[in-house]
Image 1 (tube, rainbow, N blue to C red):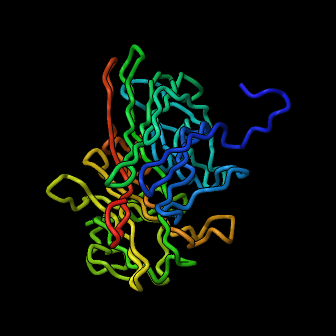
Image 2 (cartoon, rainbow, N blue to C red; image 1 turned 180 degrees about the vertical axis):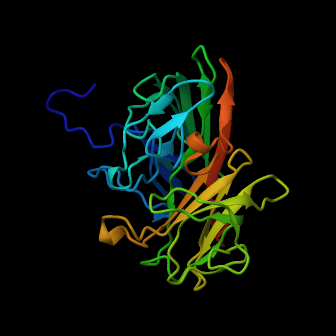
Length: 317
């Protein structure tokens, strides 16, 4: 515990990881990722030690990712639940309940750390989940494993997501080439809630083949993800002028991904400076719609993995 004279960073205690040319910082608040660099070059748009996290950057989204319309949902034969409206301008609950919670370190090494938190019942959430996140640096880059276990006495709905922002050395994402795996995209209403599912063919949202982002505005969910033989879906950002690249991969637990160019961020310097790439196990508003929601019985666990790989011509990180 800090003494009364110690200054505490807004994101709490800091865990510094290193492996080869890589370094990362994981923080107490939200068990979040604050930074990730290779040779000192950021591949992740985080925030400074003296700053509070903004734009959800690096946070884990549990027990639902993205938006929940009007903050209400009904599970099974239970009562309708009412969650705090954490996106009041759109009358939504957004990004779960653990982003601002204090997480504890349960295992630590030079290149890896596991943080944990118990999500107890509260207003709008009558369930108990034991949560852990492991961050690990290795030859393939950064890997992140999220596990949730239902330690309550009744089944509960569950979804998870992550909110990293990928960046390269350019001042904006506009000149970067983007390749993304979604075969379908999710149009939304004024609250940011999906109104259907449409194929990306012939639209500005089709990035299955790499092309410049240009002036495309993205705050867009994707489904039906193309995957490699290893079961992973991949989003790639590449600087066509020799500035390298970065890839975010997600395992088959993540059936959806959100791409966000940051045009609506309140901080002007952050807008279009990086690309939010949000792996999600379920789409926005899933607790209401039931789409791809995981049901965890008592004692059951769910694990999902994603990671960031440098696309570096100089070799493994």
